[in-house]
Image (cartoon, rainbow, N blue to C red; front, side, top):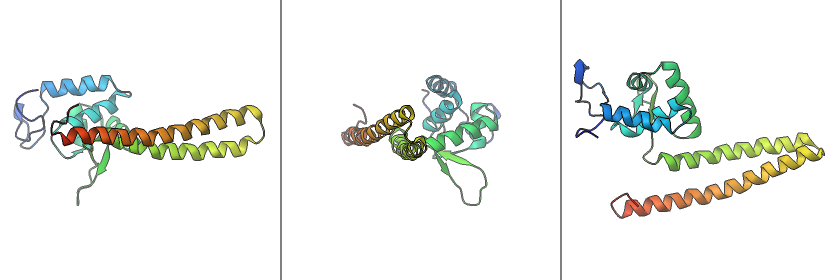
Length: 178
């Protein structure tokens, strides 16, 4: 990474407006490499951008400009990322733009958000069991789905607690690294 902060508002090369965020080539490369590990790729680009810039939040317009992406692609990506808990909406008093941010621990936030998904899935499976009645095949499949979901939810709570303990131990030693 270059010697400057990737999101320093003072970085306005090529005649950019004062305070306008401009990404250097190394940051753009990071965003694209991170996105290659993600599906859909646009969501990976959005998360990578929000993680690497030194701003508390970005507007959807800034995200689209920085990623050279359409407003629609950014809207779809941010909506999905909010739904699954990777990013959060942020409001600015008196401003009608849509803003987004990531938590310092987006991975723990994601795990916590997944619990809501599992609770919803449990409700849907229970409804399926009600309407399946005595049909042996559907009943067996739905019971297995419910049991798997219950097992996963229990393991999920343990996994989140283990992650938080691991994260906190590494933050406590001052290095933040294993």
